[in-house]
Length: 152
View (cartoon, rainbow, N blue to C red):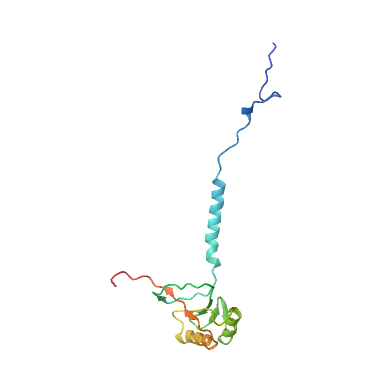
């Protein structure tokens, strides 16, 4: 029994052009979506930890937020009268020097964040100390109060 051997596509014979394995032309986005979701969860968990500052209960007003070209110096006064620049505690006697180290000139804007339950005198003492040192652009920071319904 003799079998005729014909050229097979797998044997050592010639291959035709169309017999190559076709490339997959679809993009598999599942790994991309997985990575994006993991990054989203990481940033959602990490974002609250990135905020720094002193916890202060700010009073509320109807005033709009001010727009400033540069980042101002922020001074916080806690309910017990402690003074902070950003999240660094500063004695009232060293306040002017600490502000001078951060400011370029006496024309820099300085914001004072006084807790709603803080002693009014402590907040005014901070503002008076800064004003006496020549800083004229001192502002108070408040929280935006909820809008009142029409007719009230």
